[in-house]
Image (tube, rainbow, N blue to C red; front, side, top):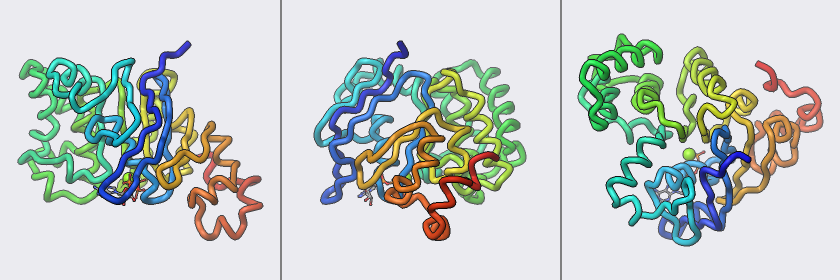
Amino acid sequence: MTPVLYSVCDVTVRYRDVTALDSLSLDVLEGERLALLGANGSGKSTLLRVLDGLIFPASGAVRFDGEELTEERLTDREFAFRFRRRVGLVFQNPDVQLFNPTVFDEIAFGPLQLRWPKEQIRQRVEETLDSMGIAHLRDRSPHQLSGGERKRVALASVAILDPAVLLLDEPAGALDPESQSQIIDQIHSWRGGRKTIITATHDLGSLEEIADRCVIFEKGRIIGQGTPMDILHDVPLLGRARLLSVQAHAHAGEVSTSHPHLHR
Ligand SMILES: Nc1ncnc2c1ncn2[C@@H]1O[C@H](COP(=O)(O)OP(=O)(O)OP(=O)(O)O)[C@@H](O)[C@H]1O
Ligand SMILES: [Mg+2]
């Protein structure tokens, strides 16, 4: 049986008077690719922050690989080091993530922290710059790049560490179609248990490629889950979760039989 990697049990997260996650429970299996779907403000990014140990629930518990993920546990340097090596989060807003003077330094930052040998860092940074199509930006300041360029640098800075668990918050958001396809193909190539990947997305068109299972959020709760196929054909659920365009709503009956995004 595939082991449970994350066990989220009855978790409530509040930001002052806003309840962002409301008694939410969810297991994520090792090697599973999970998509988080839901309207703006439904709690997807909040869950990713919880899974990355950046914020902690007001009540309930989160376990990672059998160990409870608490603020106190993460003050243990040895545990925090192991956890941070295994789990990488790409933020929805890349500005939160980028702070180095150049793109090269940004991508080399993680490996430097992990004390990789100098020559290996140089080589891996070059390879990552090439594979993410940002080699021409290497000497630029991350903060003077376009939105899509910044997103690609943020993705590269996490991808270089090759974490076993990737938390991706709208990874294709702000990317041009070619870059979107590259990211989607990359996530697709990690199917079959190669990595555990949890992706928050609004893109129903790529679900089949990026996910084995989808979880649908509404106001901090899970209101449905299933395979991408199940979800894409559950028009009432998609409607309730505000995942259909206005036009699709008007033709909801047709959408379930001929889904325009289903096969790219
Ligand atoms: N730092 C914060 N301070 C206060 N409230 C917040 C904060 N971050 C999020 N919220 C609130 O928590 C709720 C969940 O937000 P979250 O960012 O998790 O949603 P989301 O599903 O990621 O939305 P989106 O699709 O827009 O990215 C929303 O009501 C939001 O306004
Ligand atoms: Mg979000």
